[in-house]
Image 1 (spheres, rainbow, N blue to C red):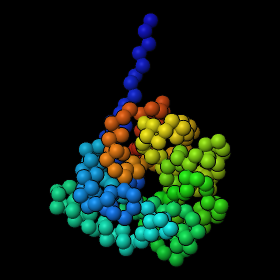
Image 2 (image 1 turned 120 degrees about the horizontal axis):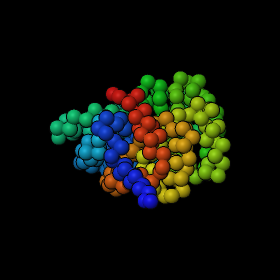
Image 3 (image 1 turned 90 degrees about the vertical axis):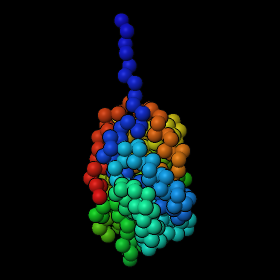
Image 4 (image 1 turned 135 degrees about the vertical axis):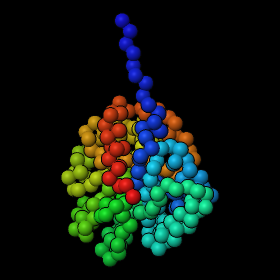
Length: 245
């Protein structure tokens, strides 16, 4: 008797033309993403071809590395929207930000309005080396200020891999989780894929994002998914319809 195993889909095949991306770095020259306006246009065209219908791009705001501001981001957004229009690209395209959680960020959101994905949902990240000492205070104060934290790529924080209870604590502290889609094709390594699989199986992801910076990321969407929880992954991807522009 023969057993036939269903082949896993390519990642791009899970994007059915209605996906709203909430994490990318497409604005030109202000972080480690697109280096020029030409690249911004090129990457946006690639998004269309992948089946991404709307884009909320999220340049880094990390005061000590990428000292962007709302004004800088809005100016770059306008420049990019103009270029997309000139190139007859009509994909809805807006900008929020990916905020690095540190002491500057905590002071900033007390006095300045944040760039949000939608309503009061704000994309946040932390160091890949260690969590901020005041992490739970930052998360608490952020919510007191009226925001809902969406934690970017929790599977990529290696310091949590051997202490999975920390993920439960983050969820209980009010964090939404955003999966980096390339984690499920092994782009960041097998350990991160394994953690993404565990988080998927536990139903801990709320949303997904591409986190595209460059063409190598785009090409990786051709790869096959290497996690078994494909049905759960599809549900997470579908959840992004909440952010329709």
